[in-house]
Length: 406
Image 1 (cartoon, rainbow, N blue to C red):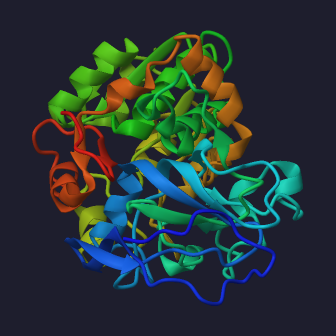
Image 2: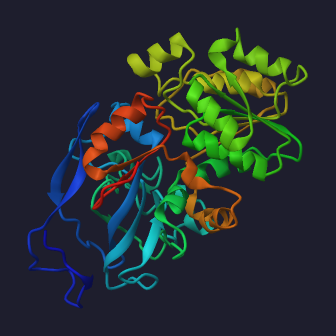
């Protein structure tokens, strides 16, 4: 494979370049991913860089794409919005990065100058996605978020390179910082949106990576009690060990809403966080409507649980992914209980430097959530075990260019 090197000359855009190909994950249809040779990504705008990817994680949101639940996920697209890499090529307008820099990249693609970016609402950038009423541009997601190829590949193009990427300190390995691209900031934003006051009780639905970081962040923001809800025993066990939380297997209680009220003095928890999203288990009705018939935007089971369980005047946070256009949810109950509902994609860049300090100071060991490390060639296997919750899989990280250690 022939690669171009260094900063592009003033004659940009390039005119005569060698044909080159890279290995990348390619979506072929629901539950059908392959690692193929794709065209070498190239500088398309003066503020682009090309990264040589050193680590790329599989996210729970990728599983929604993998299962065909997200509209306009096109055959041939490359997934992956959690990645680190080394700057390989630099567009002529890039000022903050140079070849050889190690960086971690937010999953949002943000321009840095629009109405929303100026207010640190990077997930709402109006210049990086033609469908700007939906979200900003996102790496490796559907064409509803711009159609950008993702980082589960040997190389990836990163637009607006002076805005998003953050340099990685030399003393920190990729495994410690890769989750600053999404799941750690997402869990932290969920806890922040809950407006947790000192000593309050927080319930986090879901013990996947985002749920784990939401639990950790609830403690960081002053919670007095954190309860995790799931139905997979190995995930609950890890949450207890990693975050020192109380855990409930919702399949082992008659009614999870009533149970949560009973163990919180009859009123309910102060804050409920939905870290599950559209593929929640626990309701035959929502499973049929949202995951089988696709008549609503995913299984909204946890939204109902959170609204019904939280105390009157409490806060409900939706950080799990749901798609348009609607869900069957008890909005009347939320209104009559005077609840505050907060939700949204994470504004990752807003939190990266702050959360890096938590990692550097040892308050958060982010790499512990990794259960499987695989070379890029084994990406289809990684998706299979993550989607099927096989081999006690919590989080899969792919390593292009080298053999990963288990």
